[in-house]
Image (cartoon, rainbow, N blue to C red; front, side, top):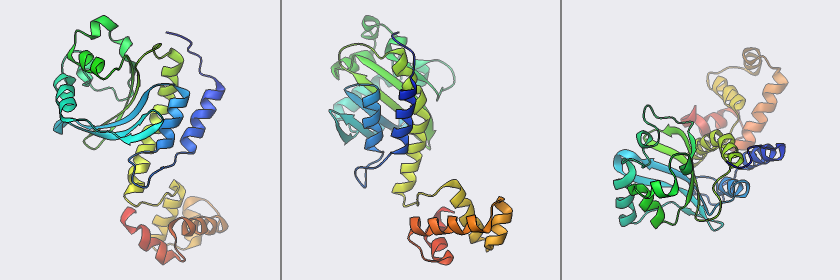
Length: 251
């Protein structure tokens, strides 16, 4: 459906969106900048990182609507209508989408499953019509604990999502999942360190010297010292002991 060629410019823009991920509000659940970037690449009225506790019929997340990000929320009436239709044929459970084991790499348009008239025969189709959703693109991610994670894009009118737009979402989907995990760690107070910096800190916590750390990681002592300097800057510490104290809950 539509053009399917993802350009080098698209790929570079995806990397920029991921690399520039920033929280616009200290308490937001995800990065508003990422949702804005996705909406620029794949124009739509709404893009949502949806976090669902299916067992408790509750939804949380971050939603971009009309250029503004808001906490994902539903009224009681909307919640009842949505969860009543969720597990029915045409609904949002994985069995309703594709019978069998859950596919957490799934990227699918509603039109890949049902035509417009056929969809309105299902309860979820009527719910979506009530929300003025005509075209939907869903990208699933590995769950986070009890939370089902999905990236959802909606259009209320106009043309359906093209094959190229589906491929763009397919490319950015795993990055969104990793960025969500990063944001969870940030909200928990975990410092934003590289994997190598964490390796250095774990060895420091065991009492290893710079020489021992360098030998174990296959790097020079000068490189170890540089890693430690950068770690001190990121965690706001002035010594090895202070750095370990500040990150001890995350080692």
